[in-house]
Length: 56
Image (cartoon, rainbow, N blue to C red):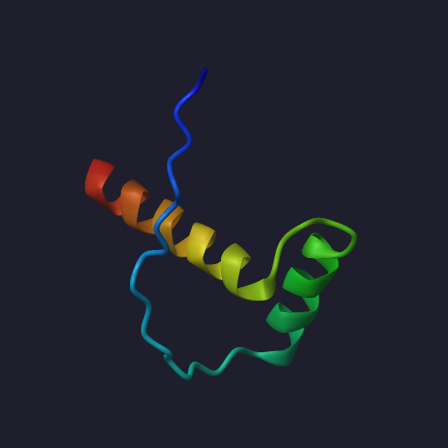
């Protein structure tokens, strides 16, 4: 029998950030119909950008 591990949620901090309206619209269109929130999309994008910077 497999071992089930209860997942842990990483600690988070609420940050207020302003986005240009056109960028919000593009993100919302990209995630429409997908199982993804605006926050999850932005977090993934930032993680990708940081990885790219590390590789430069």
